[in-house]
Amino acid sequence: MKWVIKIIFLFYFLTILTTCNSIPTEPEPLPGRRDYVWTIDTINPGNEALYLGRIWGKFPNDVWAVGSGSWTATNIWHYNGVQWRCDSIPRYVQPSAIFGIEKNQVWLGNDNNTIWLYNGIQWKKFGEYNISGYDQTCINYFDGTSSSNIYGVGFVEARGKKLWKAIIMRYNGIEWNFINVPAMKVSFETVAIETKSNILVMSGTVYDPSGFVAKVYCWDGRELKELLSDFGWSFVTKLGGDIFATLGSRIFKYSNKNLVLWKDNTGTGINGNIICGRNKNDFFIGSYTNGIVHYNGTDFTLIYNTNLTVERGMIFEKDVFFIGLDYVKGKNYIIRGKLK
Image 1 (cartoon, rainbow, N blue to C red):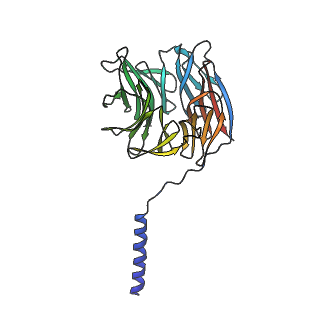
Image 2: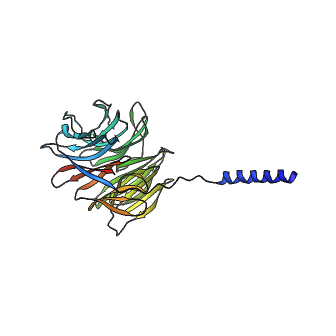
Image 3: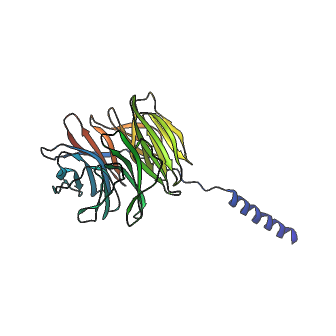
């Protein structure tokens, strides 16, 4: 009888040991589908100049698209599931960022020192933000994990003095405050928050006389670490639980305060930023040359051919929205795709 007890005990011990040593892994995301039905909407601001630059939505029937224009009454557009509408109310806004947690808490960043809030009924100026010695505050991008943990990144500038520096702001559920970061002559362009650590991964641009220099940094609340520097334009995007940075034809994956080259499309014609996606096996690249490219976990395919410049997108369970610009004619379009 004792040997039976010993065998049972040994089996139990090995089971526990195996369980303790095993490392749980996330299931591999399914390949992204490509059977979209495409439509295109024209955004018509009348005789006013408009260049849409940002898009965000809570649901596919509740999407905002904003940009800079010659008249501030046509800078904010909303899609209600049927049509795009502008309320034509003049506001001193030149939107440079938009983001929300809920449909009744949508934040609008500007290049004119202000942050606005949509409360589900109307837009109201939430506050004006300045740093001593600088006369312009611009928020280029938002990201957040909750209604009391939202970050905005951009720059402040003293016009005419060739003086500017990068900024980070945080909303704590009550107010927006500047975060003390090292002074650097860079404009932060995009930000993605690593949820488990609350580390910010940010792209930036340095305006060097020889050309635009793209930068990628991470900020853990104490140290601002440079992860990447090269000529061009970089963009950081969160895909599921992963953060990626794109620069030209290269895609880097963020991990533990470092960037690792994940895909190199040099020489393939795939050149552009990841502008939205559901996960690492289902995302879209706004190609600089011929349209929208999709990655399904296996290959990159041109999924929508257009001569429009496509640099921003928003994705839902079955719907995708992209801003398409004709810079030559000054026309704005929204390209919509819906899975069959």
